[in-house]
Length: 165
Ligand code: ADP
Image 1 (cartoon, helix red, strand yellow):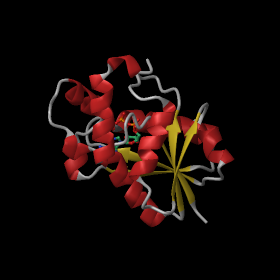
Image 2 (image 1 turned 180 degrees about the horizontal axis):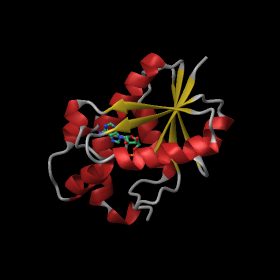
Image 3 (image 1 turned 45 degrees about the vertical axis):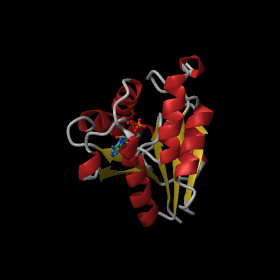
Image 4 (image 1 turned 135 degrees about the vertical axis):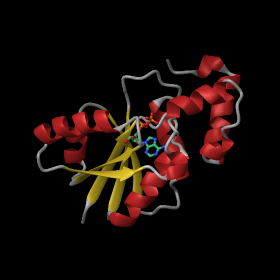
């Protein structure tokens, strides 16, 4: 049984992430979406909220699980018995950083194989960061996320006191 972990901040999960999750779920027996609890980024949603939003978005995918983790991704991958780490690659922004992380992860866990999925054309320029900026400024973003995520974003920006950081 091949288990893949797909790590990230998912702050919040977007159609870009979901496209990668769906494609990975076709190839691997089990996909564990690993929500990193303390990324070096300013977060809008708490870990529990990010997990809940991702879970709701993937309920129909029976071989997909959502779990949060802290510490090294390779340690989490080992703990859950994953042989593969999945990442998504957008055209211009991701390659160098992903390459750097892949080399470091290979040094830390040589048996963990990295599989990168090219982002689909329509999601090449979609990032959670840009999405949050557009949502905050009142732009149209509803087609980039599932409905429950759009609702959660609107609620956050309508009530800034509930931001975790
Ligand atoms: P973001 O850069 O959007 O904050 P995350 O840290 O949550 O994303 O990213 C987790 C993984 O998902 C990374 O491998 C990232 O490259 C990938 N990813 C993010 N957005 C997309 C997208 N629109 N299409 C494909 N992959 C994506």
